[in-house]
Image 1: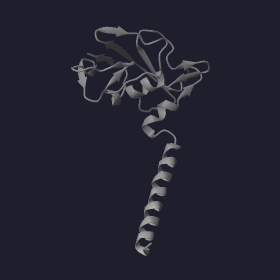
Image 2 (image 1 turned 180 degrees about the vertical axis):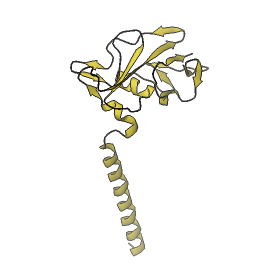
Image 3 (image 1 turned 30 degrees about the vertical axis):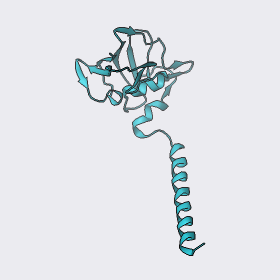
Length: 157
């Protein structure tokens, strides 16, 4: 082998190792500042928390969907966004102020919410997923920041 070929091969191999190592390191990092709410696990209600509510209504092809009671609640743990009943009232409770995006609730719930799927229903030709908040259309539904008193209507139609 020519010396230049060997040097090129070794440099390429070294760069590949750096890229692989960086990806492994990044995957082991804790949630970013914007995703801290995914790590919240409160033991109970206290006065030392940020606590507000939004209401989420979900419709798929004209049929209202039920958000189960106690979504995001398990023995000894209330996640940063959770429900207590089936009304669609989201409780956002965190030990300090932090972002709570709509996609965070779906991740906590364990249900699909992408550009092409909502609660397991696939978007078909001519359909789309839309979000209105207090009657105003939102351009980026997944990244919408939840705020106190909002009424969110998420539709696949």
